[in-house]
Image (cartoon, rainbow, N blue to C red; front, side):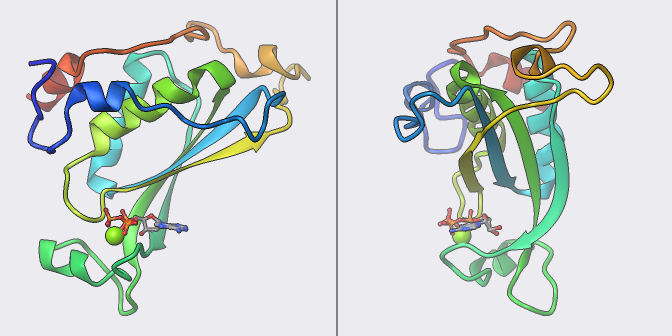
Length: 165
Ligand SMILES: Nc1ncnc2c1ncn2[C@@H]1O[C@H](COP(=O)(O)OP(=O)(O)OP(=O)(O)O)[C@@H](O)[C@H]1O
Ligand SMILES: [Mg+2]
């Protein structure tokens, strides 16, 4: 189970070994993880994140193209408009620096099919976070009741297989 390819061609241990390079921003505390994924994978990704205590996120519908210019995905039946831009889901998640790796691993495990067009993740530095209701800034603004602020390593894809069933 844990070390099977899960049909994606990628071993879980490869995903678990993934490490985001944040060295360009040595003193930045918050980062925005921007994931462009297949729309039909969005519910699975959101559920996976929520089940690990990542609750704050923003989803939007976007259109985009990757290195294939949006062309090849037509053959797999992905919806597209009259241009070469393919409909994608965008998920923005602002998290503490120590959560970036975990969030990326969760997203990859839930969004990866192994086919072209699986998407991309971009990591952006965030200067500060403000909760409008309370005027809180920084860590207390990002932190939420019941959330996990100190999650570190997820080594299994079992929860994903459960959700898939
Ligand atoms: N360089 C980029 N800049 C901004 N958005 C991008 C970029 N590359 C990809 N995207 C966005 O990510 C979506 C999915 O890209 P896609 O998965 O096709 O990337 P890819 O590099 O072509 O990889 P693959 O070979 O797996 O298809 C695109 O539709 C687009 O919205
Ligand atoms: Mg592509």
